[in-house]
Image 1 (tube, one colour):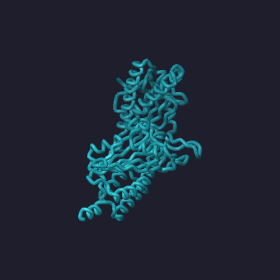
Image 2 (cartoon, helix red, strand yellow):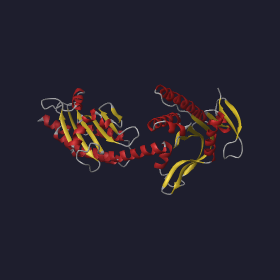
Image 3 (tube, one colour):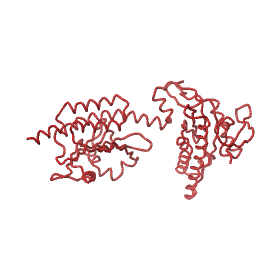
Image 4 (cartoon, one colour):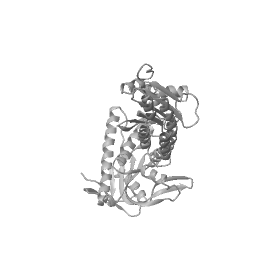
Amino acid sequence: MQRIDDRIKRGGDDDSLIGSVVDWVMAQALRDTTIEDLFEGCCLRLRSAGLPIARGYIAFRTLHPLYSAMGLTWELGNGVKTVGMSHDASRDEVWRRSPFYFMLSKDISLLRRRLTGEGAIHDFPLMTDLRDDGYTDTLCYAIHFEESTPGDTEARGILGTWSCDIKAGFSDSDIRSLIRVQNRLAVACKVIIKSQIAQNISTTYLGSNAGQRVLKGQIKRGDGEKIHAVIWYSDLRNSTALADMMPEEDYLDLLNGYFESTAGAIIDNGGDVLLLIGDAVLGIFPFTENRTQAETGELAVKAAYDALERIKELNTCACSNGKCEASFGLGLHVGNVMFGNIGLPDRLQFTTVGPAVNEVARLEALTKDLGKEILMSKEFAEIVGRQCMPMGKHQLRGIEEKREVYTMGD
């Protein structure tokens, strides 16, 4: 009799405790909570309410340039680990052998497997893995976010498992409580996932800085501000000839490699990529209170050298595969730019405009005539904490007065 009483205290029969978990989960849907904090908080509160979960897992589809889905695993004492799944993961044999693929293809929302003892079933590799990790019982679930066709294995929603490591496994009351909580968890996850997808899309297509500004409300035409910054403008050399002579797939590979080399170098060295214009890259390194102008200029110089090294590696690989090499010209300038929304009232572009932007583009065009990969304005050379080589005064197209031009010193 004592063992039964202990079981009731341990399990999910205390409706007020489970209700408090449900209330907390739903409250998170109204707050700026990460999905990692939501999931870990939910698992810890379920433990506090007496449910014997020792492991929890959720997975969901997303819109991200690198990942088709995300998976979060919580383990008692280890916190949450997040893993991105590549875009070909859904076709992988591991996915097809999972209980989730089976559940979706058969339109099953719940699947329970005891992992040890007389009633143990290991009909999926996951069950064997969980048993080997010390778990005794697991409950798998699939919750759809929208109406889906039975058998649709690509439907959006939440896939998850709850696992325990006690000999008795889950009680019936435990399972009722888990079902009650996981339905609310799916609601909160849906809200956060939609917010995260908006973040992913805005960052992918606008850049992190502009994306954050738009999501925070700068969405009307004319919204923006004046920024004092280092301006980067690079352009792929001989792009028209390369596009004509190369197969389309090879040219796209070269173009992507060029963007990874230049735009990637900007981002990795603290700058923001504003636009990918055909085969040109427009980026900025804003001046801030946290660093001097010389430090900001040095970040741009490091990014430039980083881009040159990346292009060199790209070309080494291209040569070994008998493909065309890539090269680019780069202009660096300093000036005030207007950073904000321009365009039609209902079709906008968040970008940088101003005379300084035009000047840096003309500076880059001069790299071809002077045979230099990098050219800098006098304004940029004056803030850089390294020796620059003067290239004389030159006329930049569309600019009345000649400008002093510099390149990197040896």
